[in-house]
Length: 296
Image (cartoon, rainbow, N blue to C red; front, top):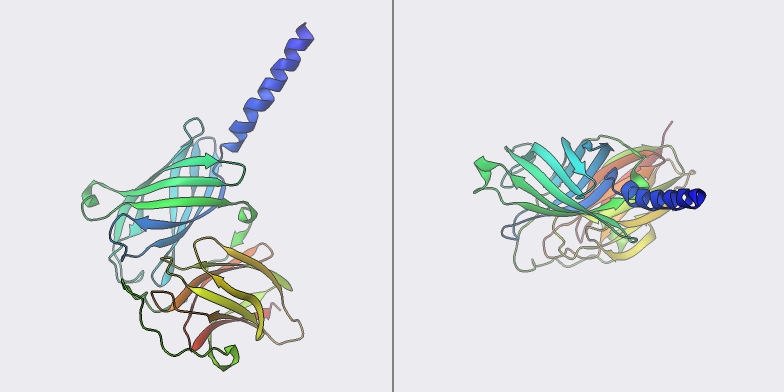
């Protein structure tokens, strides 16, 4: 009888440990912040990089503001019983600022709830302004999704690529006569990356508000990703570089301009455990292009 009770107790401990183990917020979380104001304002393509020890949480919030990638340290706490994540006040760029380099900051804090299912883990909640800004700064609502395949990667800090500000419009903007042939569009080189691996992984998102952007990717003038729509969910692919070339070219071909030209995207390049982030901006006559060189 005693042995039976021990077995039952062990089984009970196992099944209670499983949900407790799953109540962690470690890792990389991706989402888009949507302001609770007019839709003409900027939206925030963001990543939460979180570490947890007990109830303590720390890490950073990375987000794109107009022309730049901004990184800010954050601290907070997570209650595994209520599944509530609280982020202490931190500085974030005021949404009316003209650019990240010419901006003012406001203090926001975060309140999120962890939702776990077999399909995905999600953090839903908002960044809320402090009392001094509650009438001038709207809340930013987020739905972050955990990406389990990036938790051990090392991020490389780089200078952001400057791009034209998004053109805000309520009606689709008139589009110039397109050049449909990829080879006839001008390549605009935006960045050069030195890579160690002959095979790299790519993730590409719409940068900012989802406005119907469609793109294709070309590697050395050959199509590797045919016509796809960009959203806040990553389009993922792996490409093999040609070692016989002095450098490889990765180009983003704009299939359209969406409703808010130009066609902009956030591209993440995974070179083994090193990770690069950059912004690409293409239109119907020019294709943003990266030079990919083998590291000496």
